Amino acid sequence: MAKRNPKPSQPSVGDTNLFWAVVTLLFVAILASGYTAWACDYVVSSFQNSNTMVLLITDAGLKSDDAKLEGQLTTATQTLNFLHQIGLAVVIGSVGVAVTLVIRKVRRG
Image 1 (cartoon, rainbow, N blue to C red):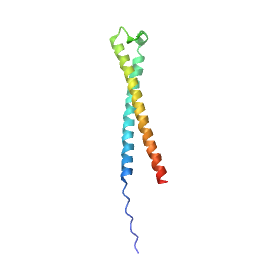
Image 2: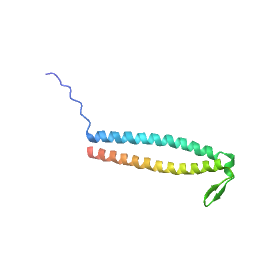
Image 3: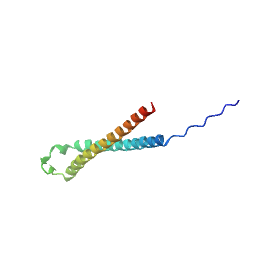
Image 4: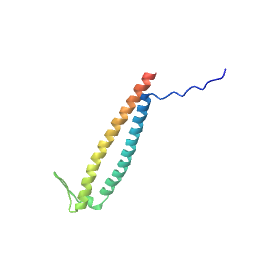
């Protein structure tokens, strides 16, 4: 009696959806980390300027006699706020994928 090669099992829809969720989250994480690295470099270079310490802090924001420096610091502040939001989004997505993987593992035994 000849042995038959078993057919490879087709991945279920759940497996496929989970795969694409992980791939998408990985793509977002890569983009976020790349942007974070670039933005951190920009912020650090903005704060290394020797004129940075000659600023007036007012209720309306930072004031400087150098318009370029003032613009750089405003952009740096906005960038840090945006990075905070990106970090939270990646954390929420990662937690969602982790919970899904745990639920799946528990259901399959």
